[in-house]
Length: 152
Image 1: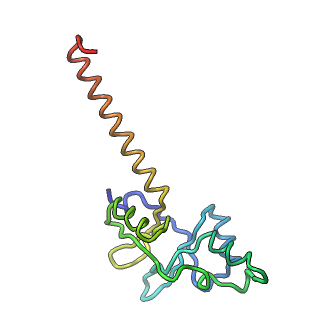
Image 2: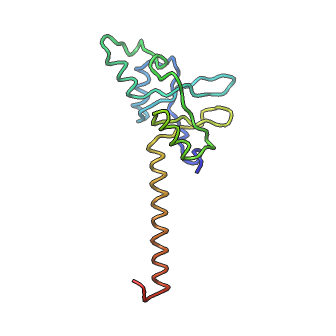
Image 3: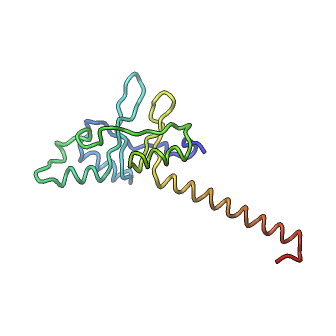
């Protein structure tokens, strides 16, 4: 199953210049725990990183911190890990595990930000697929019992 089939396309975004106060307000208003940090070059919006609510809390709780003076670019991790919208579910799991992240910006073939996928999204898809498989196995057993009434 391709990531593009179930990723969230309406991505909450920030720029490296967004203040942490602005970023936290965006997160609260959008009911999300992370923003994809983007830059636009040549008319294409590309992900630079992901800033999380935890990144903001750690930066702002420090003594003397001023959330209006600290920018998203100051606290986001230095490297972004992405997944292509044509890549599969297990490739996304592998990248999350390998890099210790719970969120991956989803990119189109040209690097354009196309969405975001979270660990919870991936687990939801796997759970739904396993539920469908379990139902198919039950139906197979019911069909066999109906075809052979003497079986229990």
